[in-house]
Each structure stands twice: as structure tokens, then as C-alpha cells.
Length: 172
Image 1 (cartoon, rainbow, N blue to C red):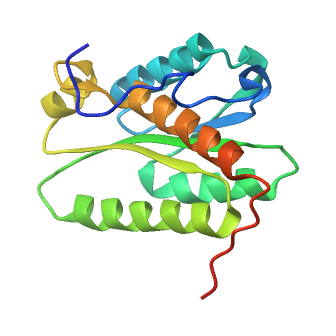
Image 2 (image 1 turned 180 degrees about the vertical axis):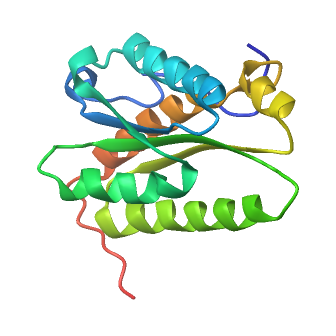
């Protein structure tokens, strides 16, 4: 894998008390399936390599990236215990500006769901100009969004554990 600008997950730097028992939801799109399958596979493999139990990684598909926020909300609203949600998709620029509308909407919505629920929701959506750029970011020369998303999820769980019990709240 190519050198990237992110700092990989390290159990020493980002400790997690009981990583095997984390409950992780991976929500992925059916659209751009070949690319999304690559990042989903690498994401799940990275979580397993970090020590998350296979039975605790739950995969859910949605039609497209626009549906990732609603899929995340449905998971949170269900009785399923979830420590973190990882959203994986790929939006490739087309002949119109649809990608701008979709990308802005899903980024805002995923952020809002995380802020309201208190559950980390990771934005693992590739937003590229063409299919080649997407492939380069799905395990090619420009890194792997699946691995990066797994690392972001584990880092957020570590942060949440570090801060639990400190009773700090934000008032609006």
C-alpha cells in the first residue's frame, strides 16, 4: 500500500480495553460495487487484524451513498448494540453536478447522526473525478479508504473510552 498522510491505528497509542467485544456496523453501498467491495473487504480485514471478533462485525448494504445516513440511523434506532458505524461508498463525478449534492448531503448527515447519537459514525466515502482515482484509493497507489476507515473507527472508540466518566458536556 502507498504511503498516506494518516497515522495508522496503534494499540499502544490508541488503547481499547476489550477490542474483541466491540460491536461494529459496516454500512456499504451497492453502487460502484467493485470499488466498494474492495474497501469493505480491506476494512473488515483490518478490524479482524486489530482483534475485533468476526461475529461482532455486522455488515449492512444500502443502495447508494445517499442512503448511508439513513442506514446508519436505522442501525442506531434498532435494538442492536453498536459501538461505531463505518459508512463505505464511492461517488464518482459524472457529467452533471449530482456528485456535489450527494457528497455534501451525506457528509453533513453522517456528521449530524454522530453528533446527535453520540456514536462515532465514520465517513469512508470515496469522492473522485473518475473510476481510476477511485481504484487508486481502494488499495491502489493512493492508499486504501477501507483501512483508513477501520483505523478511524478504532481511534474514535479509544478516545471515547479515554473520556468516559469525565462528565463533560457541551451546551448549546
